[in-house]
Image (cartoon, rainbow, N blue to C red; front, top):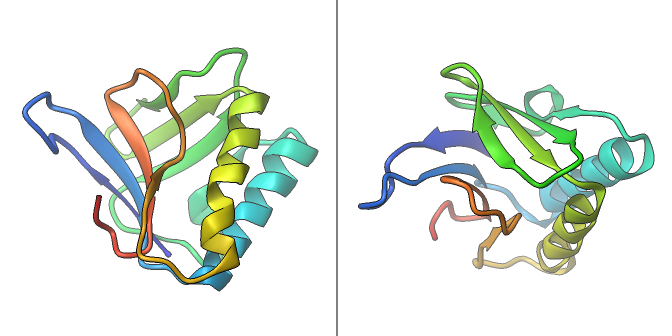
Length: 126
């Protein structure tokens, strides 16, 4: 699984953080990491610390928040995704189709009015 950040993907200057180039086994590992760290232990999750994720040009940390803010850029390569417990529960549900079978589909893992989306896409496309 690869993690990267792409800026200005459209005429609105939106950005995307992608998790891509993965199979069903890695989707399960990611889902389980979110479930364990965020939902069960209420801890942050630094994605680059997971052995199955290769970070290309950014570091993304998932954090619990009182409100759904989505991904915010703190420094050029350090990104934080701040979502509520309920939003992370929804994220785990959105990951299920990728954990049940190999697929070429994609999903944005949160629905927040933010200029940066979190894309989960085995092929890297949207």
